Length: 128
Image 1: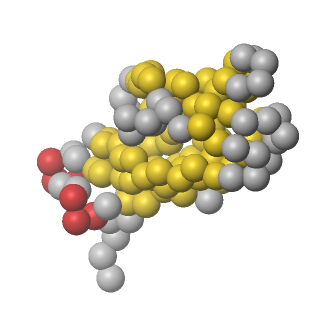
Image 2: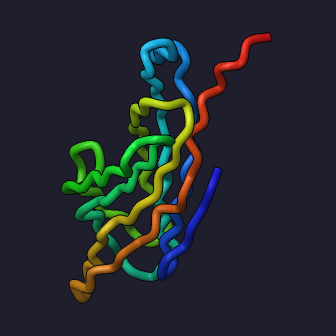
C-alpha cells in the first residue's frame, strides 16, 4: 500500500493483480485497486474530478480524466473516509499509475489538487 497526504487529506492505494480475469497469452492483464480517502483536515470536502496517468511497459502513457470516482462525487466530513475499488487493464504485465483528485473545500469553495500516490501494477504470472 502507498500513501500521500495533501492538506490533511490522506489517499492510500492498494493494487491487486486479477489472474482469473487476465489472459497473459493475449496480452490482457487486469488489475484492481482499492482507494481510501481519509479527511484528516478540519474542513468538509467534495471530490469533484479525477485525473489518472497510466503507464504500461512498452506503451504510450495514457491519461484518464473525468467527474468523480465510479459515478460518485462523495462529500467527506472531517474525520471520515471514503473507499472505493476500481480497475485497470494493461497490455503488459507491468505498469504503474498515479494522479490527482480535484476536491472542493465546502466552506470557502477553494479547489485543492490532492495527490494520488504512484503505485505499481505488476502481474504475478510465475507458476510454482
